[in-house]
Length: 444
Ligand code: SF4
Ligand code: SF4
Image (cartoon, rainbow, N blue to C red):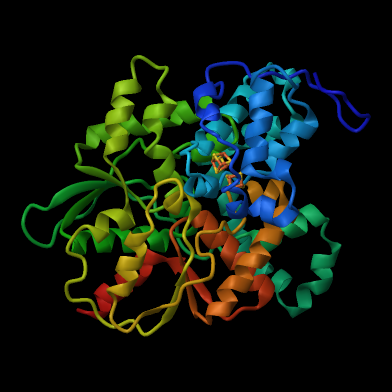
């Protein structure tokens, strides 16, 4: 058992509940260390316990009862971005993402009074706000008021320096990373587009909790591109947040409830594919089968559902999308969303799409698949590490000279936009699908 210093109190926490990490998964690790150079937190700290191998060792030790899950142990687990770059680097196919999700869920399954306060608060916030559209919309309405009243521009402008200096550090950080909410949200359900010719493939779009509220133009572009690719597009009623952030935070029960709601809603739509334009959501929905594996009533339905989930870039790249594209004269660099490149293993589709656009020049970063430090709520709960990782990303972006940074996930867009503001880089940030949409419209 652990010896506790005075800075560290033992919660006496063990892994409990349904989602205990699998010993078989952990035993796949051969301790080779190939994952270390891929890990942003190991790169930033040089510490073994902030590396995938170190965290796997801690999880194994808690699982075997050799140590307690103390504050110090949980701190090492908490600094992980869950970017899954270690999975891509691992020659032994260690499923790090699900091991970490299970470890967090198995800690949060302890009695509420014993749970680490920060973890409990984060789960509560995600459950009571993100998973509840009416509350999330109230929060975003306040954000819209902040933008539209001109207060945001004032605080961020040259005259706002003294105002910014008066804000408590946590609020100043939140302000600097807040998006500009100057567009009407996309909340339309029902039939969004009919195929331009023939019967077309019928697909459903995930509206999600955040994408349509913060970046409605991404949904608008997605619908137009899918229509161009010969699809009928519907957005079923009853769908909602995918539960990805709840899973990452260890609140597996809320994630399961959200998964069941989405499966039922999309099944009713009778579509050939469920299209997702947020990489984190797509990765989570492709794993609904595993999330609901203990639920005898839902396990099979969830597996079936997951097979039909497609990231919009993967779906479009397999279709006849390049027909009649107009010129888009831009230099673009691509940020691989972690949950597209590492979790869904999709790297070529966004590149194939960008390269097919006449006039567009794709300039690769040195490490396009390294996390930008967004990672869901990570930038709020681990602001220093998030800022360190973002600084490295912004330097990499700047070295390309690109005027446009393409992403495939709203969290990455928000984080890189914050980086652009902080560094004063002259670049815009958008989803790959927006550029393809622009090329389609330019070709008409
Ligand atoms: S998920 Fe990312 S941050 Fe976490 S251990 Fe793996 S590479 Fe490091
Ligand atoms: S690369 Fe894979 S096998 Fe090697 S230490 Fe990392 S997790 Fe373990």
